[in-house]
Amino acid sequence: MKRQIFLIILFISVFCSFIYVTQEVNSVTNIKDGDLIRNSTAQGDAQFYIYIVKLINNRKFKRLILSPKVFLSYGHLDPNNVIEVDQSTIDIYITSDLVRADSDPNIYKLYPQGDSGKKRWIKTAEKFDVLGYDWDSVYTINQVDRDEYILGSPIENCENLLMFENAHDADKVRMKIACHLRDGNIEDALNGFYVSVRDRYRENFGLLNYSLSFVGLFSVIATFGLDDIIVKELVKNESKRDILLGTAFGLKLFGAVVVLLVLIIAVSLTDNDAFTNTLIFAIYSATIFQSFNVVDFYFRAKVLSKYVVYVNVVGLLVSTIAKIVFVLIEAPLEWFAWLVCVDSVILAIGFVYIYVHNRLPLNKLTFELKTAKQLVKESWPLILSGVAISFYMKVDQVMIKEMLDSQAVGVYAAAVTLSSAWYVIPMVITSSLFPAIVNAKHHSANLYYSRLQDLYTLMVWMALIVALPITVLAPWIINSLFGESYALAAGVLSVHIWLGLFINPTLVRGKEFVADNMTYIITVSTLIGAVLNILANSLLIPKYGIMGAAWATLLARSTTFFFVPMIFPKYVRLNTVFFKSLYFSRYLDKN
Image (cartoon, rainbow, N blue to C red; front, side):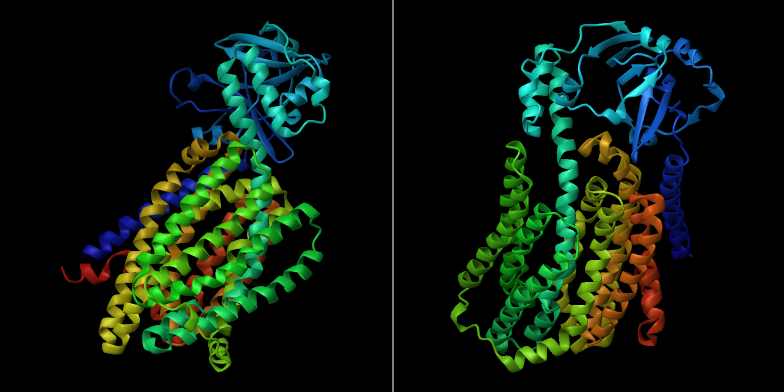
């Protein structure tokens, strides 16, 4: 009885979270250009604010209607047509304070204050561009609306504007700050700097993530799917350590060179410009140094992952500091791409250090052709699986770039980066416990399945504990970290975070298939998922944009998760194991 009640409560919680996300998406997609929106549950005067929506070039703006007098001056506006929305929907729309009146070529920047406000004339188009304003955000208003704002001093305090006509974006940012400071608007100066830098990197972030995703589609081949196989062989026979690690290193290095040739051909078939291709090859160069990751296999087999964790923490710290410095000095985008390679070099040095530090001789690592053939024969299903997984995780961003634009990739990638940032935890846990699971299988079937169920339960509940609060808090998280211009990422995050519910137990399934020498099931599963993901993205991205990509990925992942065990009789029980994990069946049955 306890577990039935527990499952009902859990189901209601998950169901409510999905309803929340669906309503949020629907509330946005049902709003049209020119609609009026309001959040009557907001605090203070904000509950009376009515905004008029502007949709242009896949962007969403809102402008505050200053007062009831202004509202009534627009004869076509009806208070009965105001759409009630929540604050997260309000935040999705970028606030515009730029207007021009009918029959008036002048553009004004507005400063609303209560039922009145101030307007300042932006004297020339050159000033408008230098200040970093957005032409799409300019609203056309009537004369009553314009005249309700008191005329302030024109925005003209930037000398020598013509010399900045062809200036670099960084110069325009600095000019914008200078303009605000001269006018005494310190808050606008700081805010303008943040917004300008953030918006500058939005498109660049999309282009960088597109390059990372493109490389990811191919670089996985260079790994030869050896990770779990080498760990398994080291657990079974440590005496072959030098041959196994040396052979794995040689295969990975060979794979990196072969895939480089494949990448050259693939790039030639795209319409990428030279700069994008430079980013791609800079990022791919990291694959060569990832061959040193074979050291990780040994420490995982010995359940000594702490050494590898130390190396990764140091590498992450150096990389994070470098990225912060790059942002502060407004470094070119290619610096960030080359930093990916530098990260791999640092990790390679760290792996060599901990290997030698533990008195393990590097000079005894040996490449053996016979062992290489045996490993490739066993790993080829995992190679195909790895390619399919890359399509699972990366093809959505590649397709967004091709169907939409690089800015859309940037917004989508912001949500995906947050959603997947914590995946390293379940990956480390499953990798660390894999040797213990293999050992349990040699001793007792009951112990083996008992440990697997425990691990499944842990993975499922880790995903739920992360997904439930983030689903609700996504708008606040995105707005706090990225601002209004990334508001659409909130919906993506609310959906994409639920992938963990299927990815986490899939990690355990993969370990079980490897332990059972049934790696071809991983290949079948990921190929089915990849095909479903591509089809779903093709259908949903054109209609729903980046939200369509998020739903497509979740749909493909969940469908594959439940369908694949049904076509392999030996593993039909895996779906039951998943549902048992949801309500702690093993533990509740004891009480």
